[in-house]
Length: 251
Image 1 (cartoon, rainbow, N blue to C red):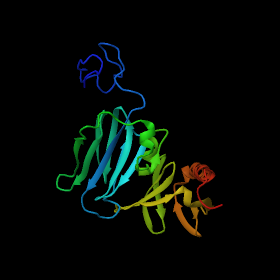
Image 2 (image 1 turned 90 degrees about the horizontal axis):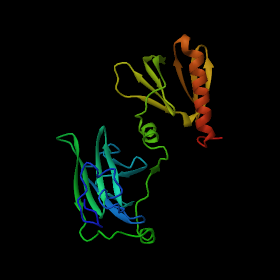
Image 3 (image 1 turned 90 degrees about the vertical axis):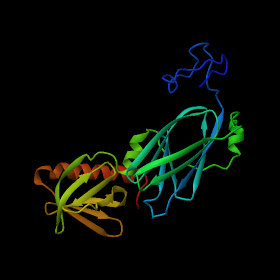
């Protein structure tokens, strides 16, 4: 990129971090200037698995299905867009000094997310906040104040706080307890049985096992090792209480 004041080219190694011209000291990006990016997803619809997730600066999350598009505005400067579909992801770090049109799709042959990025000609002037407010833009499905951590919890990419062998009915496997959910993976099966804490009314003791009493009078019982029984009961009781106190579940 070039400085608009002195015309000198900014070294590429500095591009992502520098906000002022290292030669003349002028501000490189104007406050209050906005640019629009429209992202179109292509591909074949195959249920929820075909949905593409788009993370913006690890703060906003958008969802788009094949054949659909999302449109949002970003301030002038560098922004990171992360695309995710199934287990694949791709990140782009782009300088927004014009509008962008981006096509994104999951290539089933290569197993990669591919993007086609086009700058919109004649859009270098940008928009004011007042002009942006009059545009019809896509609202994010989620906004995170603490960045990727919140998204990791939502997508199931966070690390479990407890992991141990357990039994559920006639099935043996591994029970993992996270901050927002419990996951039981039976032996020799890939599918996880997930229980969100927001759907649990209470965790009760039941003859050495844990009885998760869910909404709708559903009971899920796990037999767990005795040496961690009391610790796990306390953990679940506290976590379920925290989640429900935030306004989830029935009262």
